[in-house]
Each structure stands twice: as C-alpha cells, then as structure tokens.
Amino acid sequence: MLAPALVVLASLGLLLSSCGNDGLTLARQACGYVTTSIRLYTDAEHEPNPAKAAALRTRATVALETALPLAAQANSADGQWNPLMTTLQEVGRNSEANLITALRRQCAQAAMTNEQPPAPNHIPGQPTPSTLPGQG
Image (cartoon, rainbow, N blue to C red; front, side):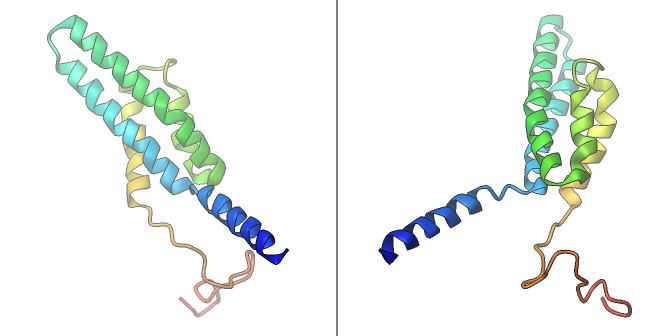
C-alpha cells in the first residue's frame, strides 16, 4: 500500500515542478516574440513594395499578439512584468511605432534580470542574511 502512495507523491511532485514557469522565463519568452515583431516592423518600414510591407506589418502584429498571453502569465507570476503586459495590450489601439521604445526597454529589463532562487530553508517574510542590518 505504501508503494502506490509513493508513486502518487512522486507524480504530484513532477506535476508541480512542471508548473514552475516563473515570471522571468515567461517574460523572456514574450520578449522573443517582441524582438521578432520589431525586426519585422523595421523591415516593413524599409520595404519599397507596399504589399510586402503590409504583409510584414501583419506578421509583426501577430508576433505581438502571440507575446501578450505570455506577458500576462509572467505578470501573474511576478507583478514586475505588468508594464510589459500593459504595453502589449495596446497593440491594435496604437501603432507599433509608438510602442517600440517601451517594448525595447521592458525586454532589455527581462534580458538583464537575473532571478535567483530563495535561500534554502528560507521562510518567506523572514529576514535573510542579505537583508539584516550590517549584512550583505
């Protein structure tokens, strides 16, 4: 009877670990689509053929629309990604030209951020050595 219980616990552990998409990982995934979109939009701006330029702009918009759910999940996991999600929500209401600067800045933040896991045996809300006065 103990063996089935261990199998259930092991399965539950695997299931929970697969749900470990943290905000940073999701934001970086969203920013991959943002980068693609900016490249496509820039290509469209330099494309002399109007039909090709329109097709590139459409692909750029689709890439931003694909990034939005990932940014929303990143925001749910970690509120620091709210600006990225909010900017992506403006797609369709504003030209991408008006969003590029903010998107670049927000994705640069995702690229530079280096999340570190909490210290072992750390109890949330309790001081850590780096937060104690005179430490860290």
